[in-house]
Image 1 (cartoon, helix red, strand yellow):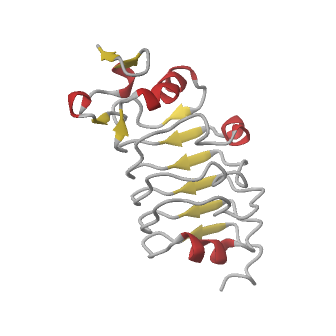
Image 2: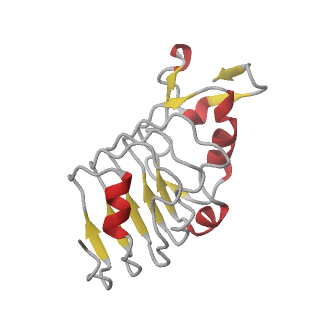
Length: 171
C-alpha cells in the first residue's frame, strides 16, 4: 500500500486496527521514516523483526495498546530511536534483554508510564536500571508503580527495594 511512498518521513497510523503482520507490510519499504505513531492500534505481543530495517527512525509511539511483551529482537532494527513511548500498555516485566544495547545507547526519552508492573524478583534489573540511567524517563517516578503482587499494588517502582530473589521490601 505504501511501497511507492519510499521518501515518507512521518506516518500516523494511530487509531487503526493493526496486527504485526499488517504493520510490517505497511512499513517495510519506508526506509526514510523518522516518525511513526502507532497509538491505539490494538497491538499486542511484538515478535522479532516486526520493524524492518529503519536506519533513521527517531520517534516511535505505541501508547494505549495491548502490548504485554516483545521478542528480544523486536527493536533490533530501529536502534536510531531517540524517543520511544510505550505508555498505557500492559507491560509487567522489563529486563536486561527487553531493549537492545544499541537502542539504549541512542535513546534520549523513554515513556513506560502507567503499565502494570510486577514487583517481583524478575524486576530487579529494571528497578536498578531506573535509578542509574541517563535516559529521560518521562512521567517517572509518579506513573511507574507496582500492580502485582497485591501487597505491592500502588507502590512506586522508585520505592520498591528488591533484595534477594524472593525477598523484597518497600519504604
